[in-house]
Amino acid sequence: MGSPATAATRWPPYRVDAEHAAAVESVRAVLTETELEAERLRRLPQRAVAALHSAGLFGVATPKEAGGWDADPLAELQVYEALARINTSAAWVVTTGSVYTSWAAAYLSDDAVAAVFDSGAPAVVAGQAPPKGRATAVPGGLRVSGRYTFGSGMSHASWVLGGFTLAGTEGTWAFIVPKDQVEVLDNWHAVGIAGSNSVDFAVTDLFVPDGHFFNTAKPVPLRGGPRFGVPIVVQVAAAHCGVALGAGQRALDEIIRRAAATPALAERGAFQRDLGQVFTALSAARDHAARLVTELGDRLRSATRLDRQFIQQLIAAQTHATDTAVHAATTAYRYAGAPAVRLADPLQRITRDLLVAGQHKFVADVSYDALGVTLVERDR
Image (cartoon, rainbow, N blue to C red; front, top):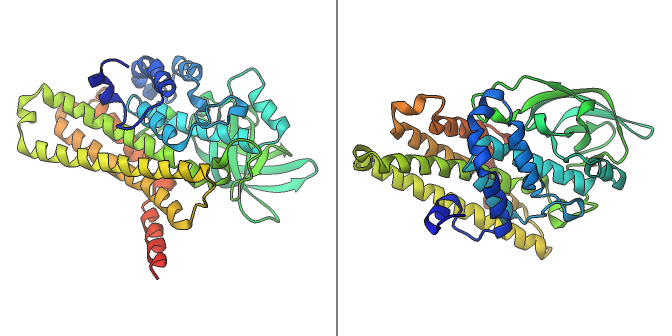
């Protein structure tokens, strides 16, 4: 990882597993080299995908029974944050692929898991979990139709997840089927996270056999640890926090590097004040997120119930991390001046990436409302 000073600029200020650090470092060069190419192609180049597979990074959250890392929440946050300090689009598709692939391993039947993970090809699941589809039960499975958006990482996925409601039942469900069974729509033209290939996709009267779908409202794990028994919005907390914090820190790293070479900027009082403020805010957001996901891991290991107020804290932390990172990036971009408007400049790209990440429903500002409700209820 280089000298201590170099390592300190790359990794969060808390413990990092050596194996996880080595995996991220092994892809640093190729993710850096292909960042502009990914934006132009609207997907990660194949050599970047191959490197991520070789490092095992799509298996961060996958249970060990299916060959994954089964990382705890803090380790997940660390890995996703470190990747986002290199390439936001790559970090985004790794988080999505890691989470959705872990669900295939945890919730599908033995036969379905064998089909996903024992085919000889790398197993990566892309898709969209919100219930955009409608299904009816038929002998041996379901028939599902629906149109989905934001299938991040679809270009390199081998399997696709789609959420749906099932006639005659309550709650929500999700299917996982081979990618060649869905219609992939090449329509990803976005202002940010451009290399994520977050295309739309559709299914029409798709037959989904028994064992290839599961309940997302009340997930029942067949494999893996206790994390798979908690609400899915809790399972993605480390992902959204990690990507936002990593991209925000990269923006600060970049403007600090430029200021060190530009005395007029470095000596400007307004810049010094704003840099100190956003650095402190981002550090606080990181510490808050790390504390919560560490507590999440502790609660899961001790089988302690996740009360509603704690869950809402986790959800709000995702929003707070993203909001804070957006502020850090826009501040850095503003002080970078006219050179930052060029498409090759990383600061404008990081800013656009974070603005798009901030549109995700899991980081909407209504999470603050929901947390506030639980705080008032607790004190009644």
